[in-house]
Each structure stands twice: as C-alpha cells, then as structure tokens.
Length: 103
Image 1 (cartoon, helix red, strand yellow):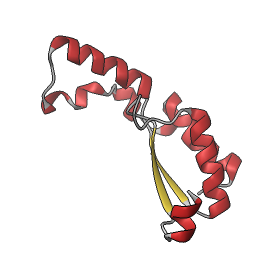
Image 2 (image 1 turned 90 degrees about the vertical axis):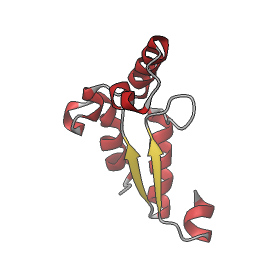
Image 3 (image 1 turned 30 degrees about the vertical axis):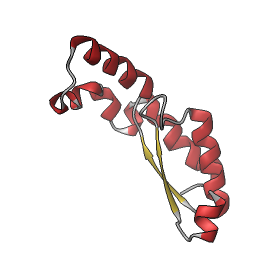
Image 4 (image 1 turned 30 degrees about the horizontal axis):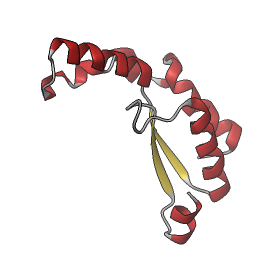
C-alpha cells in the first residue's frame, strides 16, 4: 500500500467483502488495511456484502444451472445490500475507520 500511495501517488483503495476465495477480505484484514490507510492518509472504499452468504447462494445457483447474467442479482441476498446500520457485515466497514482514524 505504501508503494502505491507514496511512490505512485494513488491515494485511494477499494477493498471487497464479497467474492469469497478471490478478492474478499475478512474483518481482520479490513481492519489492517484501514490502519495502514490511516497512516498513509489514504481513503478506503469498501464494497460491503456478506461474502459467505453470497458464496452459498452462488453454489445454489450453480447447482440449479442458473448461470446466466440474469441471475447475477439473485446471487446476493437483499439484506446484503441493506444500509450499514441494519446489516451485520457492514459493521466492520463502519467501525474500523473510527478505530483506525481512516477516512
């Protein structure tokens, strides 16, 4: 992160709480990213979803053979797109900035 922010002048990072097994950060990793971003004066954008729930729904869709783009939205539970104060998985992305001084 230091090299990207300091050497290349890129002041922001996007992290994922979706896409389990590929891009998804767990709560501890998200906390560490935000601590480092705070030290660097960087901004973190969090794609907040319940990665575990999405992965389970993806498996169900695959098992049914529902593989087309028309099924993309149904792979994410409506609650995972809820406002942060009502969704458990948004909690880390709301509290980590306060405890790390990250913007």
